[in-house]
Length: 294
Image 1: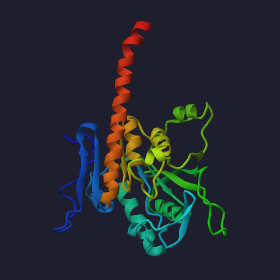
Image 2: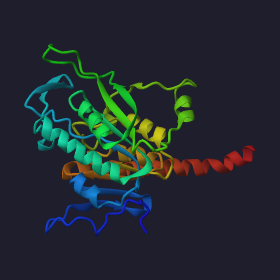
Image 3: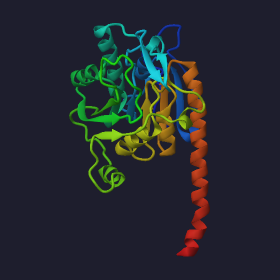
């Protein structure tokens, strides 16, 4: 029995002597799994139509030797080999490959969210169109605490774009419109969201260079999934997606190549589980009082 419904098929493509992945962390009781390996190879072995929602924060291909500002200091923009550009054609080919692998595992009415800057988001959108995804929305995430542009030759980069798409043109996607309206003081929620970059509390176990805020993932997950749904992050990094999924009672599968970030993920996921259990215990403890009040 697999509570995640995300089954890695033994009958899929043979990759020779080198295993395509390892199970880095597995918690069947709470429906959480971390896999170490190449997301394309892993998804090619996963069960088709097994995931309700995907959030992907892929490489932006910005590690070019430049500098940026962080906490008032000049720092390198280089994040690692995984973020180095291989040229426009090869970069787009990679985007097509992982989007195709994601499309395969999405359920017929499943949706995918993909974040990016202007450097790659147009390639991502074009790739989605090539593969037959149905693009639903573009979310403009405005970072009120964005770092300044040190070169003074451009406007400050204070936004990222998150594309939301359904598996195909026939998909009947889920959207929790009433909740989104409730969260926006009874008004229809627009596609420009002002959310701060991750605060120090979210980085207490360590940080990922492209870490997203829990508030952003919370809103995405609430908008497009129901409790018990399977949420996948093919480039999970420090597993902000997983933290939000756990706190919202969703199942979670994260994939990454780096031990450093998978270790960080485990710490954050365990803390999220503790927070969820504490919240449940407080809720249960309040029930007798509520009954007496009735």
